[in-house]
Length: 333
Image (cartoon, rainbow, N blue to C red; front, side, top):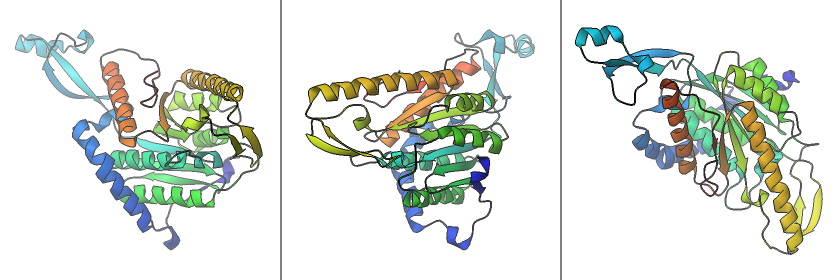
């Protein structure tokens, strides 16, 4: 199973990132990253959780501070209460575990789920890589499976975006459904040092991925980035439609004009949503939902804000349950 992943430690002449990858990254830098920089004010540290805490500064005690961080020696010397301020150790890598199976190529509007995947990976990889973090990826899909070792720099982000584009072009209808558990188990054998793992998938998969995801979360900081399309939650009245299973290629003629059919579809979709969110919660991971009709900047900002809130709570001694960040239309769960 794990031998299906091939490592690409060095680029060949054919693997030089294309101009399209560079144009895409420039667009993301101008439309998303520049706006985020103005809001983050350099506080990129909240995106990743380090191995430990480093003493960063001392300041006067404020009413909301945790008394457990009081520095009694400094307090006695200055005759004024002072607390220690910590920052997390950032000697970590970020890994993107990418589900590029055929179902991710679906989209009912102007964007596909794969478009959201590409944009999110480009923004996060560049945001983290600019501040000295290393970025790696494991690509899983019908076009083949590959590992891109963790490295830093803009060239690494370009290489990653180019690999995703090539994998999308090579993907087609697969035999059988996705086995996300294979990717997660392979990650446990590939990523040895504690890292931040972004599992980017629509989670349309055979059962059995919950346990390996939970096992990863025990060793790493894991974020599930769930891709979805509004059509997967509710069907509009469009009359007779021919629908095709992106995973198996099976086709079926359905009557969306039938109110009862649309209601049954919505009920089954709601049940699946509830089961999926429960499974992700049990695995102990933060979850970000990216819908194809969602704005990428707004989605990333929601993610940054939640991570910042959780980071402040950890320094303050509070313990929070895994967070679930839904699209704007869905609100916070």
